[in-house]
Image (tube, rainbow, N blue to C red; front, side):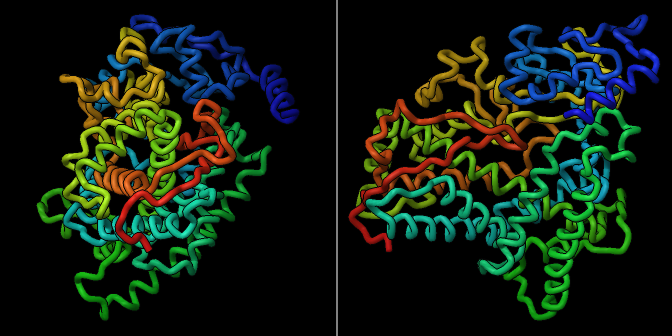
Length: 504
């Protein structure tokens, strides 16, 4: 970090002191740690994680302020303040912040996840919900069932041997999304695309000083611009090839065989257009190739790591709590029996399994920090949140709020059997694993379906033991911060066949 120290010294010598701690006639900024001239709180950048912000909230409160260079940040770790942002003033906080890397890699916000809120975004979201995530899109849901079946057969073939559950479920969700997006279950091209995704993920999470001190962007002291350019060229090359193949095959494809690329190409034009007067989605929105590529990236990112992480955390929490695991598996035996596999119609009766998954999402939300940006000055909990401030709603901390949850740090699925307990549909702000309001997760139903089906089958088909005589209390439950917060170490366990019916 010598380069950063040099730049800081130069700036402090050459730039005037610009600190605005409040504005006459307006509410004050929220409390927060005192910053240095120019750089503000940039020396504590390493604390901008769900755990670091939760620790700072204990000192400064559920709404606190940070200044990173020229960027204002407000962290929210309490349900009522989250409600003010996500419901009461949803129209003001509906934009998403985007770093230099995110803006560049999403073709200047041509996607849905980071596009600013407005008419075009609303139509893109409608398109994604109806065409990509709807239950009417049978192929997406069929791919979940069939890929879960592949995973079960893979585990059955390794019965009695240690299985890396983390790798198993990542491959499961990768195959589901790859198949739904590109219409192929072939492994050809998957390694290349996963490599692109991994580089994008690193760049999305990389610290870039130019995000906080904009005029350093051209200097590029960290050499990130070259990496960004290479990453986007790789994505362009890969997806352009996929799109060209789909265009060539479009005349030969039956209506029932469409995949996500086909659905998006139906809205393709050289120039993005929006016709607000048309009620027909097909006539109201046109997407450029950049829009299509960026939406594909959204779906691949949003549907792979998030769901895989949730499955792995559910298995981890249950294996660390043998009594809870026993109760879930006993329910499966009572409802389904041991002479057949669990079926979709069974899940309505699997109450305790659903409770265990809710408790997993409370402790390990798929996206631990929900990022928003103010479209104009706003007031939250009596404090000023200035225009273009980055608002970080700590869903991880809110789910562990001791004022909202008894034994907040403990895995207690039974809490969700009590009447009136919070649900994750978006109206109970003490439990928001999928966000709430306009920018809530559009793929929630498909993700939950994959989570239920995968965990249900893994627990019903097999009993699981930790390897090498490890005790449940010895499990490492640390996580790693990124766009998601997966386990720091992959979960490994030894399966034994539990059912009487064939699995292979």
